[in-house]
Length: 281
Image (cartoon, rainbow, N blue to C red; front, side):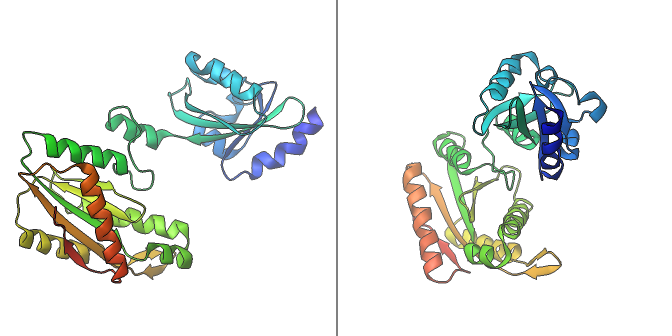
């Protein structure tokens, strides 16, 4: 079996993510990424059963993962006994009793999940509330007695698919994250920004500002977030489109608001983007 372990050692070392090689559930090889992710020195990691590194409530899940690793499986959340670091494990059966386990940190997801009250409700690229959470917050604000007026601002990054084709997925994620940060930096504390879809953000504001004032805010924001983003020493330029609307003394359904926003996004795309519209709710 030692020769089989040695044969797969290169697979472990060359893996771009955290990787462990198990024999009968015992860790025989670990790459640098796995050691850093788990926060355990290699001397205290090798030769130890993986299940012993987990809190007791996940030991049986770990046993099942290792035993049933005929295809890629995942167990989440898994927490280490040392430091209670949340991890995601994915296992694949190799020869004999050898199992290859990929290790990924879920610290960021769990952090945002805890903020949101226990559910994974935040977008992984930006860290902002995701589509479902921001819409649930919209529904809450529209129905709340304390929130008589709700203003909406939805901003889309124009031509994002074309930017992905030209600069790659990583560049697009960088642009999306930077635009989200720029929006958030210009909001007041009661306002909330969330990821509306793959190209856009939805901002919820407690405001009864008239359409003219909302349009001025939207046009200013559109210009402020559209500065080029530096990626690999190149400046990538883009434009944005914004639609604003005010819900005052009304009680439309979230479905209607969603349909209106999607229609506005379609109109902006059809016209070439880089525009501001007012939403008639």
